[in-house]
Amino acid sequence: MSNNQENLQRKKRAIPESPSRFGIKQVLRMNNVSMPWKRALGSALATSIPVLLGVLFDQLIYGVTASLGAFTYLYTSNESYKQRAKKIAVIAIAIALSMVMGTILAPYIIALSIVIGLIGITAFYVLHALRIVGPGAIFFVLVFAVATGLPIDPSAAWERGFFVLMGGYLHGLLRWSVGFSIPLNRRRMQW
Image 1 (tube, rainbow, N blue to C red):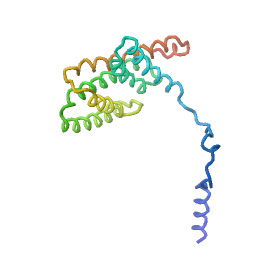
Image 2 (cartoon, rainbow, N blue to C red):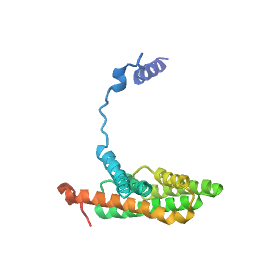
Image 3 (spheres, one colour):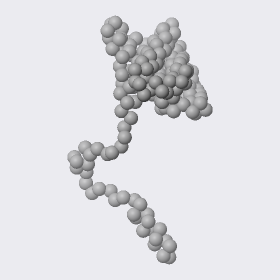
Image 4 (cartoon, rainbow, N blue to C red):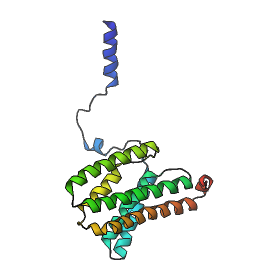
């Protein structure tokens, strides 16, 4: 019986008590958790540059489409430049193909539901097999879904895919230019 009482006492100590009331102080309190600010700011910059270029050239729809390719930023980390170049190229091509397939299959509802599942499954297994760290298959599925929400025009599939691909490669140029300008990263350049 004493063993059960000891276990109950341990459980009581392990579960913190809930606060009796929430005030504005508790809501606005900042925890000491490290945030990946470089990653968040880099992602914001990579997605905003294509949109700004689209506004500059009075082609906002192309800028927004190209900003979808900048999601490749989230799949890269601190690896060698050769590895990063390969990863950006492959992921940009895959996201562009998601856009092309979504645009072509937009009129066919049943095919959409089957292919969106296949894209999710394939991206999940390939990313895990290659041990690519990142948000997983969500952005491949998201770009496919966004393509189905655009005006139905299967003849524009390759054009949309091209802009997504260029957005991914614009991100690559951004990553490489920042990497080459920082002296500490020169040590990691292993071409």
